[in-house]
Image (cartoon, rainbow, N blue to C red; front, side, top):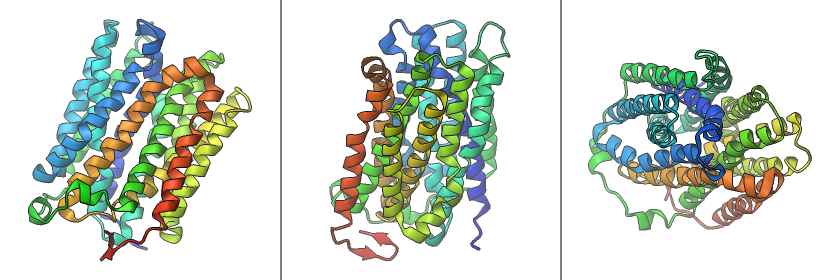
Length: 396
């Protein structure tokens, strides 16, 4: 059995800490918006700004790491996360909606930098181990699925009368722990080939159908998942479910997102990225259909678990596919562009979640997810019928 380097295991633990913070935010931020937003349409604005911050950081973070290395980039990202969590904490204490939005934007920027963890794991492995490395880093989210929602509930009792204040104190602690972890990892410095090697233009890169397909599949899968996930706490609140029920559904959703990571890499090695992405799209569509049946707890539970597994297959499959489409000197371009577009869709989904939930309701909101899922399936079908030029382990 192929062993993975210690760096990959460390990145998996770091991802677990940061995703715990992310899930903690998902559990409480929309509800903080309910308390602080000056009007209903702005309830999910703090969540949307988190994803906008994430999107805004992707290209700068990728190019910064190309020249300064992964360690410096990840440390700076964690420092931004600590700052954002502190701003959000004090803004919530002062009940200031504007500054709270600033805090979630900064936390989002930190999350954007941390998305490079999966690419750092790829670079630490031989090509044959890449799907397994991606899966292990993403599997760090299993700890987050258990700890994140429970931490949201536990921290609600730390400051009596201020239900969500403790969550942002916990968030500061998570980013500080991740900071020390990354500082201890043997992350390599960028090579001369990565910094000065031959690199194609964006126009040439985007002529590759498989590269475009990987970006589209990842972007639509992530956008659909974030939109439905962000709307869930508000929808459950409207259907008179308590916060503990909402936290439980989010917890199981996150388990659905990350638990399959323990075997997704093996499935990719056996069946290939294309079939795994197809399967993920089918599961995303199934979530939209399940949401039509009822608004009871178990219907939310099943829909959100299905949503999580569908996201896992599309995201890991698309990441593995993307890694085959660029040369070392092109990785900052391709990885940065990919994450910018993927998390741009996530930001758009989170921003639209409040509007669509209040305008359409839970059932119609989910039905609106079917057309973009169909686009991802259609693009995947088309790309597999266009001949590709293969050089080494990369599709060009």
